[in-house]
Length: 368
Image (cartoon, rainbow, N blue to C red; front, side):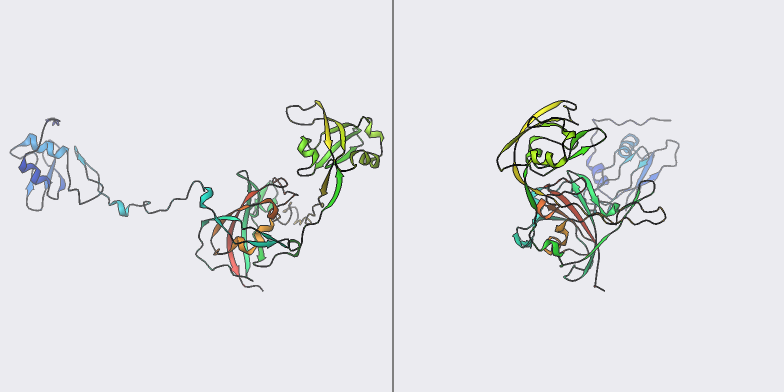
């Protein structure tokens, strides 16, 4: 079998360029050399039986199609043919890709609104998907899924609303009347205050230790670095705290505004775990947060083992935050702490923290 080689120094003649400019189709040659023949609109030019077999074989090796015909070219190389495809009709080329990251400049600002009887600036939002369904109107029942993300992690979600046996979860959408804000968010928040270190303590009778149960957000104890489960060894020199009544311990920790108290603590976590540290705290007026009320657990023969669903942040009830949404739409809202979980926190979201709220409008229907 004769081997056809391609010389890089070869240049086509004027006649050959003219023939190459014509629309071409590829055919398998019937001879034993196995090369191809070209067919034009006017005549058929055999590549093996041509008067210039060497040149013709080189033309078979490199095909140049008219530039205006296709955006992708057909290239026949020693019998291999790649079918030309118009780029405009290629599958997947017209699909709109989602943005990987949403910059601060991409967010829009909602209209200002009233919250807890005070004027509040608008919240930032971004529609990741524009719904094609019915527009959400005042008085309609909105059925939504929401997910609260703190530092990129899912803290609360209606998509994991109920816990089943075997650590399985099921989704449970939230329903509410759009435009109706619960009465508790229409009045100023009221907190009872106490002048102290901003920490709740408890006595462990088994271990005979006084330990910290919780700290008030931005209170003296939290700002000093005291944490839950830290053990208080002494207060202003008083030791053997397990022998003191709890009322006496409360008197030692509270006092006049601006006064100081010296406490000795054994750390329960962190790099200094087990070490004893001394702190001088300045007493401040700190708010006492109300105890969280939990929904009664619904059981179904052992099927359900969770509450009725995650607590929604107040911002979801604010009409301006969801204004313009349509069924099928998805929106990301940057939630300031004062219209989020405020100074109480919720789940993995600490008190006073901002977070992102993702809302998907599943349905909008008339109230029954």
